[in-house]
Length: 209
Image (cartoon, rainbow, N blue to C red):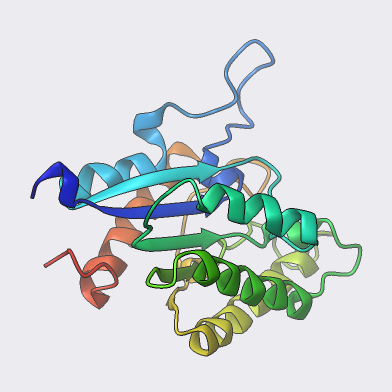
């Protein structure tokens, strides 16, 4: 396929897309090497068919204010045409709430998808559930994990309403670092493999055979 014919896949996420490494010391880069982050690993498999735009940011939440949406759509308008938009957000939204409210976050996701379609009308959107947290029953953070599981169910319904693809990454067994939130290098490799399988088996990207 000619480079000019590559489809554009915009990946919009938080620190688990950015590749944040909480194991890094204060003297080291806090980001995993490009080759070890799941978007770059996925790009290696997609080769000449799809060009990935990797937009991960530490601490990112879904847009919710008018100013947020203005900045978000301004970023989208940098591209003449986006063929695919994949979003994996919700973890920070939950963790920033004293009492997690998955329904509110799912509502923000729905508005986010509508905002994408307002700029790129033909873009196919993909909603990805955040990875399962590593908190066990009895731990203080366990109720956030249960809220994260509920969020996956709500995101599935949001995807149906918005005619978007849905990928339940929250059901995957992924390796996490000690904090129970961030993917390890092994976890990034596992995530990329699972995402590639989803894309191929369900033909989410029409450029893949």
